[in-house]
Amino acid sequence: MTHTYLLMVFKVLFTVRPSLLFAWISSDLLDRVKDEGKAKIHLQQF
Image (cartoon, rainbow, N blue to C red; front, side, top):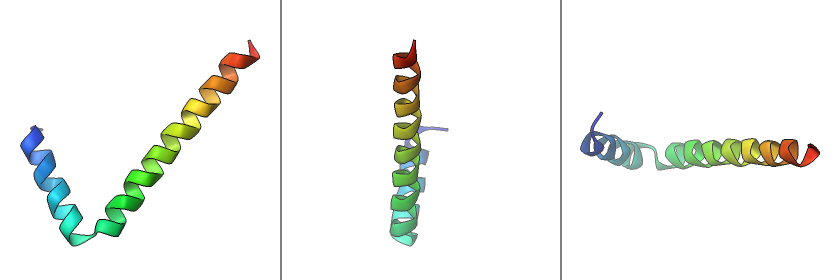
């Protein structure tokens, strides 16, 4: 997968369903934040 291909896919998604794309990105970010929070809590326990 090339960088231009990804940009093209994002452009298509952005024009077709921007709300869906934003929801996917925000949920992905929330999952990452939750995982990082769990890791920090896990590290603090030891």
